[in-house]
Length: 119
Image (cartoon, rainbow, N blue to C red; front, side):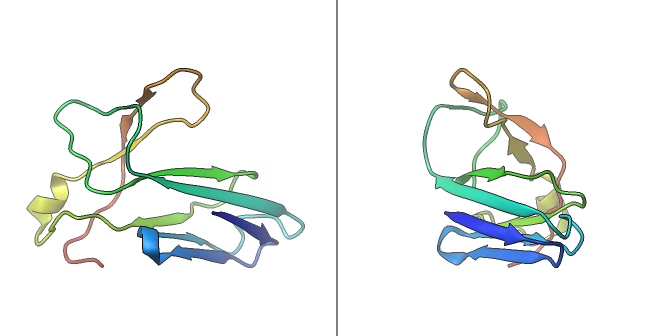
């Protein structure tokens, strides 16, 4: 999926059939910026995830033709049941760089926020 974002007013990319939503806040791009966002949902491939990790969503390849000036909010649907803070503390995001030259993609742990009963 490719989306074009123009200007600094903010934008929301909602892809419900793949459990993906990306909110780009106002001011994350310059007023005269013309930005392409490419997103691909992947369910299998050559991935090297951290030991003792279990994947609970699709893998998402996300590319932006511009660097954001403010943080963007990416929401991913997953199949884990999170009913309390202890469950949430067991969850982590893993990321891999899309520009690495060799497979498998090497994932590392990245900070993120999980909340109980969020949908």
